[in-house]
Length: 159
Image 1: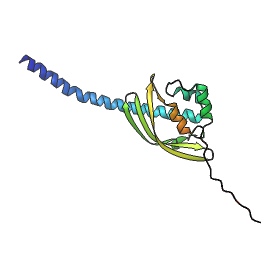
Image 2: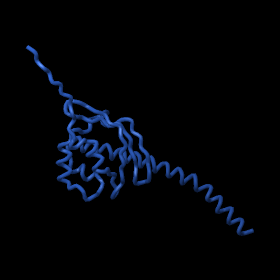
Image 3: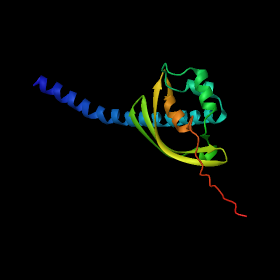
Image 4: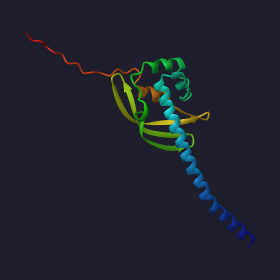
């Protein structure tokens, strides 16, 4: 009989604790989303400002690029983020784990003489207490090394 009472008390405690734990997880997921979006906006702002050294520090740690080579590549990029409300629209954040999120957004990008929009998903990872993005994601979005082809028409002049 004593074992049944202990089992009932334990079961009751579990039933009470589970909803509280679930609410805490939801609140944490919202906080993670907010932090990740804020960090992604900061990444776009550093890029727009041409602060490539600090932008490099917001990328995931790997041994492929040096800060100097990354900065040179980004400085020659065809695209950079637009300002203000055009910078990022239609943002949807999915929390995969407490340290990994995927942000899908429509990004406004300035190009010489024009503006483009790209809707894409970006994976951010929390490393060393800071949200970071893969360098390859930024280099791809910036279209580093790509030259936009323009259509040239030959005009034949007849006299």
